[in-house]
Length: 328
Image 1: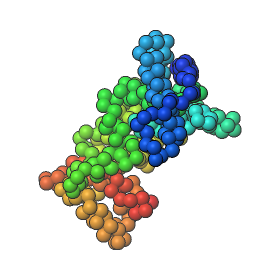
Image 2: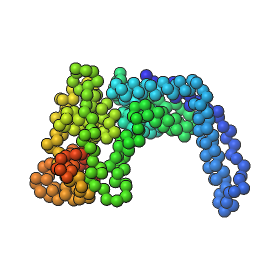
Image 3: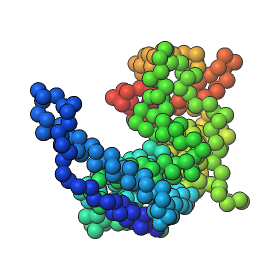
Image 4: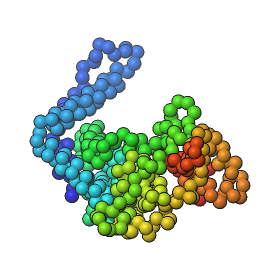
C-alpha cells in the first residue's frame, strides 16, 4: 500500500505572498536590518504554513481520512513483520531519510530506498509485506517534517502503550545513556533490565514454532527490547537488530537461536550494588588476563546478582564500554 495519497494533502496549502514585512520599530539600528527582515519573513511564513496545516487536519475530512489510512497501513505492515520503505530525491529524499530515522527510533522498522538505486537492483528490498511511501513535494520542508513527525507519533501510540520508553531505548545513547545522564553515581542495578520482565517469544499461531518474525515482533512490543526464546535464554536488543537485517522472517527461531541467544549459565555475574564505574574497572582488569579475554568480549551478557546471589537482571557489555574497548 502507498502513502502517496495521504502525502498529496501537503500540496493543498495556500501560497503566502513573498513580500517581506515592513521594517519593525524594534530592530537594532546597529545591525543589518535587511537580514533580520528576511529572517522574520521566513519564520512568519513557516509559522503560518504550520497553522494552515493544523487547520487543514482540523476541518478537512479527506485529509483526516488519508491520515488514518496511512496510520492503518503502517500498523498492518508492522503486525506482519514488514517495513516502511520510503523513497524520494532532493529535499523530499532528505525528509524521507529523517522520517525513516524517526520511525526506527520508535521500533517501527523502516528503510530508505533511493529511486536511482531502486532501478539498479535495490528494488528487491521491497517485499509483499512492505508499505511504500514517497514524501510529497511541497514548498515548505517545515510542514513536511511536522507532518511526518505527526504520522510517526500517531503510529507509535497505536503500537506502543507508551512510546517514550521505546524512544529512549532506540534513540542514540539508548536507555543506558538516558540513565547515565542522571545525577549521582550509577549502579549496575540502575541500568540492568529485570530478567523477570523480559517477555518470552510466542508464535502468532497456536501449535506452531516461533519464527524470527515472532522474535522481532516481541522485541518491538517489549519496553526494554530484550526477549527470551526460552525461560533459560535471552536475546539482547543488538542481536535483535541483527535479525532484522536481511534475515528470513519465516525462518524458525530455534535454528538461529544458538548464534544469538545467551543461556543464563553463561551470563557473567556482577554485583548489582557495584557502580557502573566499578564494573568497567573490573572488566578492564580481567581483560589483562587470558581468561578474561576469552569471555569479556562483544556480545557478552552481564548478569547482575542481588544480595542473595540470584541473577536478577541483564546488561549488554556494549552498554558500559566505549566502542574502542570492545573486541570480537
